[in-house]
Image 1 (cartoon, rainbow, N blue to C red):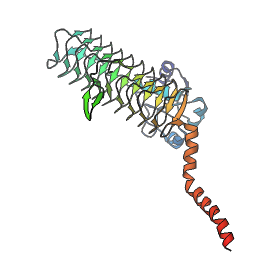
Image 2: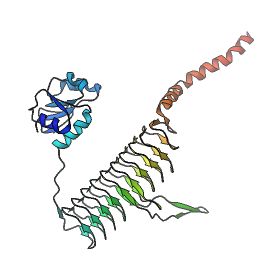
Image 3: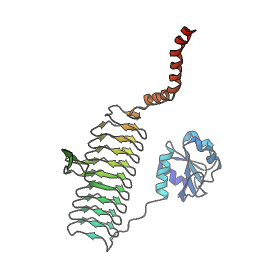
Image 4: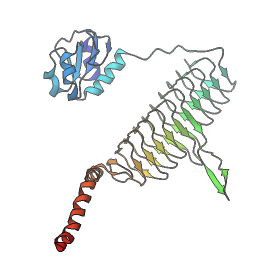
Length: 339
């Protein structure tokens, strides 16, 4: 694809040779003459100067840093992401049912569905048009999968789970397992039946080996456009608002509500029954123990506004010197009296 066409389709402009033919994308260090790369971090200026890329995506203010063909965009990383999708389109779906798949007679399959080897589709499941079910997937009784959604191999959707349109679920994800609901009878744990569902909106991506538990009574709900990384635990009754992104190894305890357009970094923990408002960012390895009612960036254990947390961390590193100074001050009057 020519650079000029690519720029038009991703919403950018061209500086230099717009006729440059591009076949793929690569990093600045690895890109060749037919590949597109991008530059957003000033730490990579040396790589930008040395790159053999056929073209580079840059912000308007960085255009002068590269002499070759450029795709100029206000958000270079977004433009690069869209360009990469155009240059590396997803494989075309080949509709059909593998003979080793087991599909219940009452299941309903839309047009152009693909069901791969040894997948299981249980009673009353519904698959929309263009759905892809990967090898060894399990689609339980009454599950609904919306049009154009894709399940990678070994995904498990347990009974009653609902998946919206155009979702992507990566290998090993489990949706609809029982939540961790237990009552204590004089030291003996008694299981609380988990009767809700998992309901996932449209355009959601769920990472490998992530688990989303069914609600105890009400549903566990994942909003439209949510992006979940690998190895995330979403407990029963959790609600995650539209277009929130959550990185790997996050644990969200039961009945917590996370708002829209939030960003949760890796390794964050949430205690149960919290309410997190819209437009909140929580930095990596923080522990959220209280509800957050004001948009902003939060850090620490327990999580607090990041600006205050950074000040406290800085003071903590000064603690030893402050203690030594205090000890010297406390000794000074006694030493003077002894003299």
